[in-house]
Structures are given as structure tokens and as C-alpha cells.
Image (cartoon, rainbow, N blue to C red):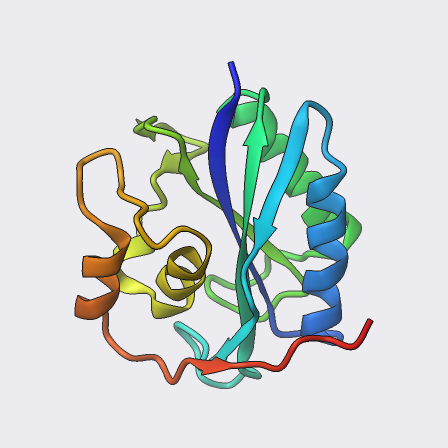
Length: 164
């Protein structure tokens, strides 16, 4: 069964916008998955330790036949191919891919929580989702538009598109 999914992208190391652009192409090539759209990229202050560069973030909308944990495995493989190292919570990273929304599924286990646990508190997640699907709602009925209006500001700045 094909499911609408939204994946958040983030990077603050090794040319972050280029990291995200490569990741978008890799997500579009996932098996049993169709690329729908990508959001613009945004820059924002880091969450957590402030002794690191600003982040570049965005989101991708996919339709997939992959189950949630299988999709997570693919996301983590892409992160590893980009040199992702998990050395410090909320620390700098070459690539972070988060499964934000998986259709109407609500899941919370030792490996995966969807919708993403911090989604409602992060403007750098909500704004790209709003760009992709302005009428999007979470499985519990909360609208992305309303969550975005209530979300704390983290210095979000729209970035110009990358040259092709």
C-alpha cells in the first residue's frame, strides 16, 4: 500500500546545502518509492549546543510502499554514506534524515517515533512541511499551519535555490 511520507533533512557540515541536494536525489531513487516534491532550504540556529555552525534544513515528500522501519533503514544508510557520525546529542552533522510523518501512522518504539517527537517545536521542520503541503494535518488532527503559527522562532531564513 502506497503511503505519503515526509522526510526532514538537515546538515551543518561539509557544504550543507550540497549535502541536502545530494540526499534529495538519493531519496528520489529509493526502491518502491516515488518522489513527489522538495521544499526550499532554510538556514537556522542549531538546536542544543550553540558552538556549531547554523543548520540548513528542508523536507521531501515521497510516496512509498516501504514499511516505516524499512524506510528508516534506508534513511540511516544514506546518512552513513554522507559520513554521519553520532558523537554528541544535537551536535554537528553532515546529514540528518528524520522520518517526520508516515501517512496516518502513529508509532513509538525503541527505534522510531512518528510523527517525529519534536516536530511541533521546530520551525525548521514545520515551515518546509507547510511549503510542501499547506493543508497537511498530523494523525491526531493538528494542522501543520496552526503548529507553525505557534512555534518558537529559531532564526529561520529562506535560502536562495542552488544553481543547477
